[in-house]
Image 1 (cartoon, one colour):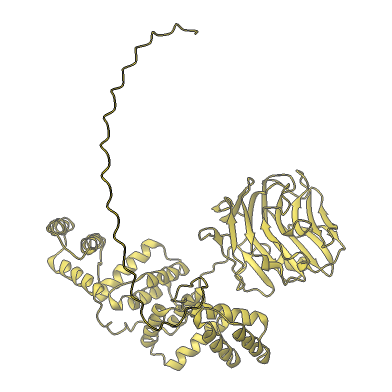
Image 2 (cartoon, rainbow, N blue to C red):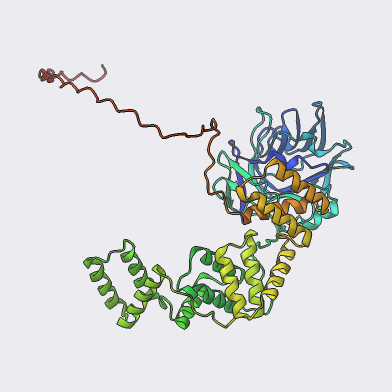
Length: 515
């Protein structure tokens, strides 16, 4: 399974400093596997030198410490004597709350310390995985998986209940959640709505390795019972091909539905050929797909050369394609270049298909223009009224916790989108929204979720941000450009003298060995 690997030579992860700002109580947990014991190496180190909360090994030993340095620099420590097993996955968690400092390994309490303090007393510094805020300490060498930060002091029973299964990211009290299943560039996503994405630094990497004993939970949308995956795949392909093409957005949506329905790529390709044949659109066999790719390549520059024609004729003969089929493929390519009005939608949908497509489209919490078009086609093929389609959309959003879900939230969301239309919130707009949040009795969590969804639904600013400059003066008249001075004539360079010939050096006599 995908896990985070830190090489012990400086590789580490940096989490946003705001992660700990509001944590009064806290639970930090994850699966850890030490490959070797570096001196005072950290699983995590939140804060700054002299004022931090850390999970570390003692010197180069297997003793585990949960340590807090308060703002006065005084150290408080819960100790798990010889709790680390090198080369073995272990679940490790720390709890900070009214019960003091608690340290668990594999769900069992191994150390405690009665010191009570707000966890955010260490905020304002750097939040690391695998690195210390003290320069003399050595980096962590090993693997980390399924790392979680909670805004609650979880009980031992709660820790044991979820330690062997992945989460979705929408659980109550979950402040940050990193599965480290993938990395886009040097970032790995926080799966909560808080957006505390992890920065992978100095060689930290996500890699496939034997992971901890946890149940995998898919983030793909679930397909309701009663819709066979093959039928759903056919339906969405049919809608996508109404304009004789499948663009990148549609292809990504089809791919998500394929994976949710556990269809393998070969099955999906065969289904696509069947749908194309039923609609008489594009290549319908493996041979036609080969020819069509060559046809697209030949037309890429807009000019069909004599060599292109000769090559395509040879391919047609070799692949055994009829003139009628070649003419149909050329016609499809032409329609892709200049799309016609889409034909009537295919009447093969089931009522649940619209709901599934909405769930799939909302995986990224936003429905773009292409997805809106597909949803409209599905609604038509389902004979859904606008009111019924809106009802399904609202129901799915409520279950996923996406967008406004009540009339006050609708009002707040509309104002928020208007305020964000220029790409940023002014102080006045921020104050107005804060007042609305209080007036509508919206929780901070709901307001943050609506703000995230609003930012996704507002297109990025078209105008490039410029550096601040002096205010421009009003232009009364257009100044004539100053005349350009004629350049002085360039003097002819003096002729370069021919160099004197270099004398050949006299050959040296070879030295005797040993000199």
